[in-house]
Image (cartoon, rainbow, N blue to C red):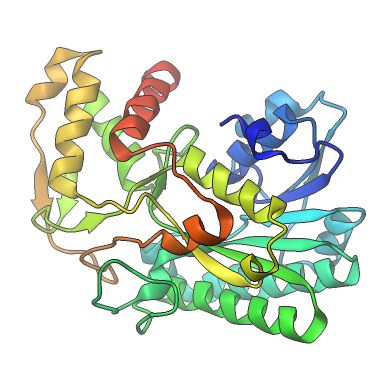
Length: 332
């Protein structure tokens, strides 16, 4: 993602929490290419040093190995920072169901620590990763920011509490906040391994190993899959906007289109088969629906378009082609 077109001041110092993770490391790469001074705060619980090691010799990059559950680490990381892109969290609905206490400690207590540190160190704006899981059992499609349902998992609760805390801090302490409700982000550097791997990298890895991916349910569940470069665009827009109506609120970050899992696997097989024709013959299997999953996810992106001039550059087909190329080059 070339963010120079978004006119981000290269003199700004930006903190990316969770910067060794999938989204955070992509943000760091884009910011450093723009000439920004970047600090990364990460405890490497789910992130990987390999995602950021190419920056270790860059004088504009600082790594702080610390934990957002430790307020002192948060205060150290936010010292002298202009803006925060807060990506640090424990993701995954199943993980939160298996271990709600740790998910809450990281996603709620850690989030509150970061807000306090941002307030105390005079950070200009706090941009944070929210989640489409906040829509919960809301049945309406597309999802519109001010209409949500009841959360369906501990993870969803934690991400909604983040929004409530951000709102209170903006009203009580005057700190500017922007929440970005990510919808099924995918792309380069997304980890295909582990019990809580996201569906796209996991399926790509399985297809490359001639292993049949298992779809939870009959494959009719659909998602608004969103390529990483669209997410980078939204984070930079959230930093650079001077529209006062555009801050202290939340936005959907998506494409505004949905793809079901059957369609997804068909596209993945098609794009991977250009590298290895045998992948076309790998069958897909089906299992029980997963607890806490919502059947369909589709975002309205009108608010982001109107207030932030958001214009997603990548539809799912374009993003999948780039992601598959990256996985084949880096994982095969």
